[in-house]
Length: 179
Image (cartoon, one colour):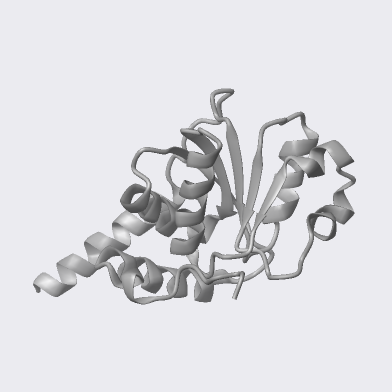
């Protein structure tokens, strides 16, 4: 019975954290971060940059060898806009994305930022930010993926539940890109 209640509560928190308020977008947000790994995330980042955002941008979890021009080629960003983008090749997981975001934010003296990720990924991302970077004020801007449906939500819930119990500590988060 206790197990069933625990599962129901965690499912409820997952759903509320995935679909609830994401934090207000504000002029006070001094950094923009895009987590790679899902459809429409880079496009959303490009839209924000093209709409006038001029602060620093981090794209985290980028496949080694990919260049910023390749990521944004389809969106027509200027050379100045591309120059504001930092690519992170070290993150291997959502925990890695959060850790690398924290490092980047400290280097840029940023305490308020906006993170773009998929809607199904928002709850786990938010949980990891609370755990690893509680000093950051993070507004998550979820985007809808092109596909996935129930299967991707179930898979993400399992990952969320593992993070709830701290299992991400046993998974690779960051790799040495200089190795």
